[in-house]
Image (cartoon, rainbow, N blue to C red; front, side):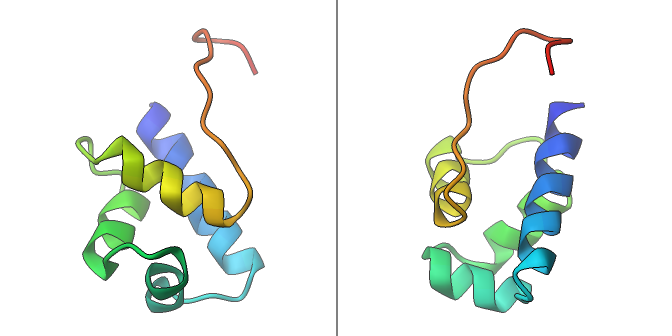
Length: 69
């Protein structure tokens, strides 16, 4: 479930900033395939790259107990 939340949030942030996946990959410094896979909810991704992409939007990933919002 967490992967779908991450995928949805990334897509939302990208669209709110009027960016294509190509734009995001260039500006955040990760590959286009990584952005595509992340938005599609791929189960295995490199956390350092996830952090890098979300950091571009000034977001950070934090550990959180399941069910806490």
